[in-house]
Length: 208
Image (cartoon, rainbow, N blue to C red; front, side, top):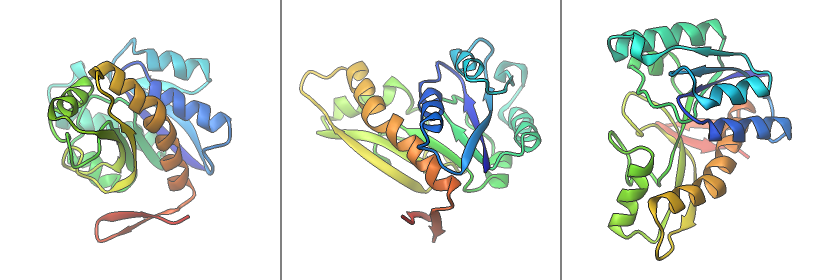
């Protein structure tokens, strides 16, 4: 049984999707053993508490830079004996001291079809604003491994939704979360925990 540590910063809707998936048996071979928040008072911490999952807070504001903060996160991950780290609305980019030690063991969800509308500066509603401004006909979400560059790690799964006339960024965000993120993130976690993801030439392949 692999230890899953989930990193959060806000409301924790993706965390809730993972908790629900674990309870319903969708996630096989793994268990959420700890939730780590970058902010005190994040509602995600309530979600963890309500499900009996241990949580800890490592406030980003208490560290002078990304490197010192990342070292604190790394120490916590090692203490928790993390086998898989899931970034679920975690709003801090981790230094390579974490991404190298946990290479191909950190999963993130990005609310667009990478390589579109991704990289530094593309997060939250900004992603959907950019997609709508461009006039794309489909959008979606990408579940990928995390490396040293923002949104540049190997892609595990992608899913799409149609973009409708009159969509606002908020409407599109909700459609992508409900139809893609909340389904594919637990699926990717389960695949990892069952050792069904292979890496070849820097790309991820799913072994069904």
